[in-house]
Length: 195
Image: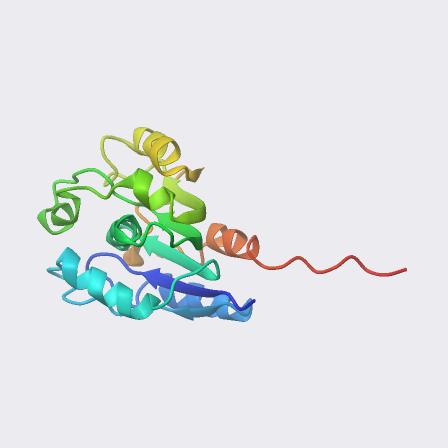
């Protein structure tokens, strides 16, 4: 079974920014085929254009697919999952700093009117996780309440970290050890050594 991963970058992000290239290389080193598609009009994005680009990158989705989204990319992936065929289930979803309620930033909030259907998205994922920083001022009303919603509505395991901000490309937070730990959990375990 060959795993593959798609990383959806943030608003104003690019595949070459921040932690995305390093994460892609680290996933490739684990033999997980990884793609970081350039999502269109990154400074003034529209949900439908991002969903079309993600659909093209994702192609056939099954339990070998791992989706990783950062900030607005996480919101776009949640919308994509919520709209996917009800019988379609992917292997894993990792959300990094997902703003699932209005932020006050017009470009981001257009993806949240309406917000993604977390329950529907959760039904299309075998296992989901979120990484949330307690020092993230973009997550409203606050990181703890947002984390509770991700747990209750999406069914995501939430990993709270202290001082990582919004994990933005400019933050210098590379690599993300939590991402690699999550990805390794999908790898087949080697058989025990024989005596």
